[in-house]
Image: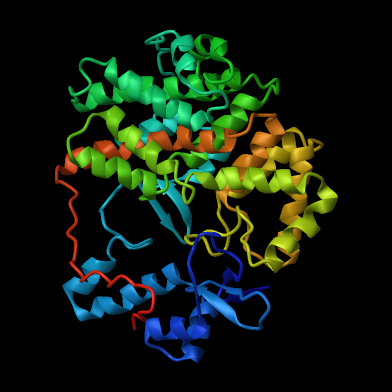
Length: 436
């Protein structure tokens, strides 16, 4: 089911369902190589492939092929480099906020996993990302007052609104009610960011339980606000939620972070930048990963069904969400602390048992280790959090990184405005006419 070479693990099934697949002949032609070279790229983990149902052939992920071709074409000059510069995985911006490398994830040079496991507060890590300095003592942010009654926003939201969607509406309203939101000296902006992150944590429940918002705002920390807003009765919930927030705080230039930076480069206020990031996060190829993991665990239902459900998905050529990460071929280092946390607090919870069974089935099948999305959902199951909590944890934690990148973009001062290389549009096909 998988291939391993040079320490890299590549799952033949590790692709998103909506990603375009092409046959081997077309894949080799796109790269301008022989099939043997294409197979070498697969074994090295550079191109993903899945079996074509009903045949012995494989199909190959087009986005991987195009990204690999863009790298090869870079030798042809500036135009080739520019044409591939905004594809997944190509560096476009210098940043000192975080680094992803063979040694793992680091925030301003500090190992992210160590910060989380050692119990450093999310507020401390946010200040590290914003200033470059880890506070010597634990930081407490002042509790903000509600800008408007939570019931007002609750009345505007349809029944069953996901928490991340509710937070998007909240940020827009907070921005509209801030008369000096364009006044952005760095210290004022950091104070605004502290208030905003406290609000994000406390308002996650506004669509389901608006009465908890005011109580949640009075808690001492962002993690405690989340625990209060979600009403979890687990005593260790704030500490475990804090761990998740720290692990999610930044991950260099993912889609939502890039959206925040592009918006910041236009001179937009902080609320607009965070709104842009939340909009990007709403896409199924980004923030929807946690939701797909939730759906997988719900489909499995019971631990004894894990093998049946997983192998049926693989037989159909579908992906199993929550496994493998392009930047971590040997496993996402953020995930083990989350899995350990989930199993330490409520190993008997059905959701945790189901998740553990899926992990074991995928491990035995030789697939890559789980991603941070799987870990977030497993922790949410252990704490008895509502649907959508995994994606919400990710959003609240990543907001610290969004702010850091907004501040850095403003320091750099330039407008992020890539050029388009014009290509002739394809001729539309019509009945009775074949387009070569």
